[in-house]
Image 1: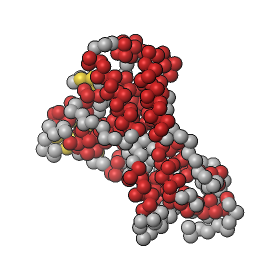
Image 2: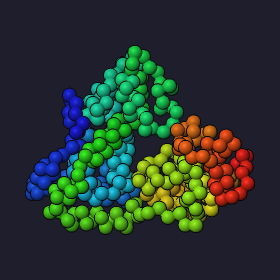
Image 3: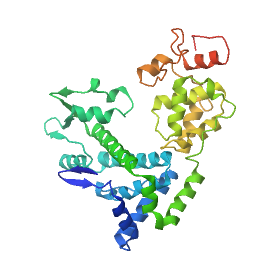
Image 4: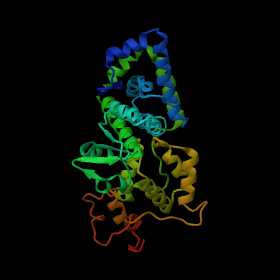
Length: 337
């Protein structure tokens, strides 16, 4: 549960509350059950989430987390959480215009802030900024590039909305991880049709399917590419540069665009039309350029290098992921990749 002095966003329910909620014939609680199921099903279909007019609209999300724990599919859970995360960000950027209202909504999400009328900027504790900005992709979200004074970071509305959305994700996933699957199944025991409908939709969606690489040899991939694939299989939203690296690497390794697009179906924010366009652009199908993955130094500077103790990765002459793959396949090394 995310608490504040101005309200409570109800994310956490105990087992008894879930049983009572599901067993009640109250019309309002029936709407909560329907809203929870609709959100999960819409997240699989890449449908647009309904707009929210306040964070109170998410009071049913505690039930969503119990249902997701009963289904026990991490890719689906991350897709649903990220759907709500993005809805919260749009809401804070578009619907909440008054600074006092924005401050109140931020408090509901666990973000302490203050507003400076003269500058039109908010400030948040540096510790809060560091905690929630760590999941944002891109150097512009690092503390080094912020205006910091006496332990507080100045933020505009857009940055605040991004911090708030990550606060929501962290809280939601912590609560989800604390729910025992056996407890979830027991609480949902009387709603087998409810769960079966979701399971059937999940099976048809392909979200939780095993990633198939065809004839491409996974064992020869560099650690960075293996990590991206593992994260994608687990439903993690990869940063843009990691996605670009993965697409361009797999294309150069011989995977077809169709298989690459299918691989991305496990991503929490998968959009078939957008993914098809991006893959075809990177592979040169609809553009004049066939892109190659970035060099190891670029991946390292963006915190996307996972070489660890890999002996080949740690050779001083190895500069590029494709160079790694070529050496593993027994081809001459070429530092100019």
